[in-house]
Amino acid sequence: MAGMKKSGAVTENRRRIALLKPLTMGFCAVLLVFSLAGCGSRHYEFSQSKNGITVEMAITPYPQQSLVPNTYDLKITRNGQALNTPVKMDFKMTNMDMGNNLVQATAKGKGTYEVRKMLSMSGKWQIFVETQGQKFVFDTTAAGQKVKNAKE
Ligand SMILES: [Cu+2]
Image (cartoon, rainbow, N blue to C red; front, side, top):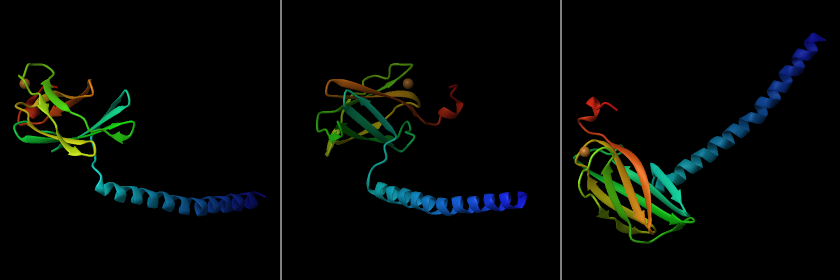
């Protein structure tokens, strides 16, 4: 009796494995297709949505650094549709006044925008994206020579 039970369990396990294998392979194939499809499209480290507008932002290099030009690539959509509109970016440190850093983003078409900006100091920066009368705030950190010694 016990032996029959055992072999029944083994058969059941084999059946499960036989079922799982194609499922796992199928899942991997789907992942592969998605990652290949992703090659052509930008990866955005930040994303924020408000009132139907979504702002995605990629920073190069990432993480951003102080005292070198960083590139900020934006993609702005409204209800999933590319939005072509004036866009401003502002950069403020959270704990001190760093002067005026307001810049107009350059439109690159299809709802994408670019800003190149050098941050004059390492530490915590809030990046503001202003468009359509709305402000999107991203909390970021700029790495730099001083970051290793910073108490954060
Ligand atoms: Cu500062």
